[in-house]
Amino acid sequence: MRKWNNILVRVIIVLFLLHAFMGSLVLLGLSTIAFTPLSFLLLLAVLVHAILGIVATCSAWKSGKVSGRWYLRQNAAFWTKRISGLAILLLLGFHVTAYTINVNGKFFLREFTFCKMVLQLLFILAIFIHLFVSIKSMLIAKGVVKFKERMIDWMLVLSVMTLFFVVAVVAYYIQWQV
Image (cartoon, rainbow, N blue to C red; front, side, top):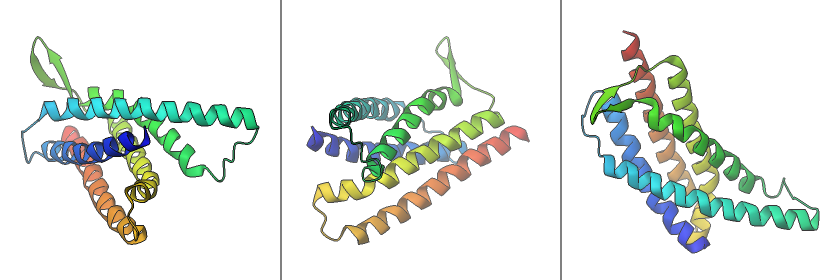
């Protein structure tokens, strides 16, 4: 199960970066391409990943219950992934409905309020935290020997991309206010 989840995670990361980059370009007014099949494929992959994460969490919960030892400090990354994953799932509903509405087959923009902007920024933050905590275990599972160097590379790319996504959301909010 871990092997399939590891492969799925790599697919999710690629799909996420494409979706977020394309969406940011749309928010900035630099593109009009909304590749909806990509979004649905990403949503499906995230839901399968969530199910696998729930199975792993239930297993860890049961073993902690039996032994009476939770090792929360030693398993901080594991539980941080679970908490950030839950935050992602909760905020995903707001993300899906934040920008457009479909009425009789026609799409219309929704008003982008301050509350929606904050929820989108929290969504981006939850994804960043989830990826940040997961990178080390992903690289180790992949068999990368010098994972510290690769981790720095990953963090640089994720930080720059996250900053770009945040700027796009804030710029979109500002456009709605003008």
